[in-house]
Length: 262
Ligand SMILES: Nc1ncnc2c1ncn2[C@@H]1O[C@H](COP(=O)(O)OP(=O)(O)OP(=O)(O)O)[C@@H](O)[C@H]1O
Ligand SMILES: [Mg+2]
Image 1 (spheres, protein in one colour):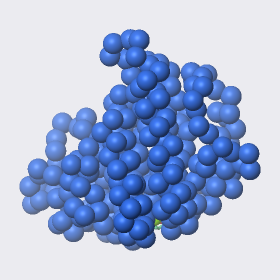
Image 2: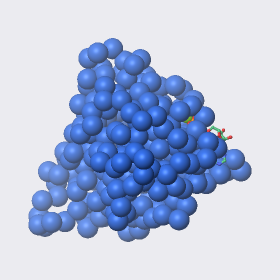
Image 3: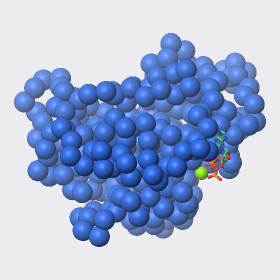
């Protein structure tokens, strides 16, 4: 199974990774970058799940992903739907652990489990829109996924947020993301949360152009985030590519999972 994707001059390995956190002010290029990474992951066979309560670009993919006979939705558009989607996903992760215990040290790649990519666009907006109980439910499931999914979950989180403060995402959750990306220049609070432990004066300044940003990955040899430029997706018809990839992997050679919920 291939588990590597390219991003500018960098390679990101989803095996052994929890996911990527993408932070940046409006218009900095978060959605474009996340859509690029989602398509790359889908081209490795990843099954997509989408949380987009702003009902913007990602929400429109529901027309392709959610069939009338689907058991569970792949696209969630309200905080309540997001909580339900995360509950279904957390259950799947737990089933994967229960059903795959025979080999010491094996992970989801060894068991040939289908990877899943969870796209969460505008995380902070979703939380502020949710009532308290739903917001707690969402962060509770997210915690379980980020702390537990790495070995057997095969679940890769792509979480984009405009703001990053400790009330939006606990520091102990934000630092669990294997890859952390800041689009354009971030304020000092977001920088501190996205790239903890590094001297802010050493953080490179990037151009204030959409698509330009800083990237940190657990596999880099430095804690200082590095400048990168995200691919320009303006010529890519994302829904068309999504449809093709869905069709390509409709019949696939991943392990059959009797408890698969979609
Ligand atoms: N990598 C890129 N290369 C070239 N242009 C880009 C790139 N990324 C973004 N842009 C341009 O910037 C615009 C805004 O990007 P995008 O919608 O991804 O920002 P965002 O951070 O998600 O904003 P919002 O917070 O409003 O959702 C895009 O419509 C596109 O024109
Ligand atoms: Mg956006």
